[in-house]
Each structure stands twice: as structure tokens, then as C-alpha cells.
Image (cartoon, rainbow, N blue to C red; front, top):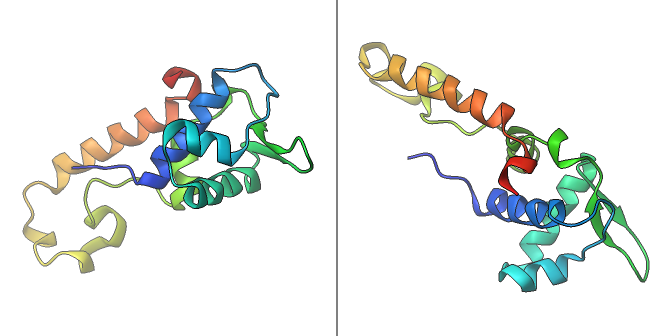
Length: 134
């Protein structure tokens, strides 16, 4: 079963929270972590990655924190996953690692149906935006 990592889940939760508020509102990692009972250190690292890729803006100073840098309609779930995990979610290792990943690769009877599932998943994540999870 495909499962998103905790890092991706925390990133999506934080972005959803920001998207529900007026654009430009600033949130600290500490307040988001407390609000959703997430580990602060892990959430802070996720937000830093999102900031490095321009999805959120990192604001320094007394009133610092993070704010959405892009409109929720411009940020896809696929982009968030790639930024946080540095790869696309895969339904089977053979689509990531190729024939070397599985001794059944040449005789596999489910590789093609899984390939169709993978393509559909890619389309879904490539088109679903943060706005859709608000």
C-alpha cells in the first residue's frame, strides 16, 4: 500500500493550515507543532525545505515564522512530495529501481497493471493542489 511519510503529512497539514488563513499571515513552527501535536524539530526541518524551494517564505525577527509564498492553487501535492522526499511516491520498487530490484521482474504478471496505477497516481498528485485539501 502506498503510504505518505510523516514528513509529507506534516508538510501538508502545515500548508493546509496556512492556506485556510489570509495570504501573508505568518506562523511559527512552534505554534503549528503545538496546534497539531507534531514533533517540532521534524516540522521545522520540513518547513525549511519548503522555504528553500519557495513554497513558503521564511521570515526572520521577532515576528518571524513562515508564510505561504505561493497561492494554494499553484502548489501541487506532487511538488510538496518531491520537495520533502526528493522523489515521487511509487507503488512498486521496480518503477524506482528497475530490473535489479526484483528477481521476478522479467516474469512479473502485475508490473503492467501497477504501471497503470502509478501513472494514474502521478496524474492525481500532479493536478491536486493545496487548495483542494483546504
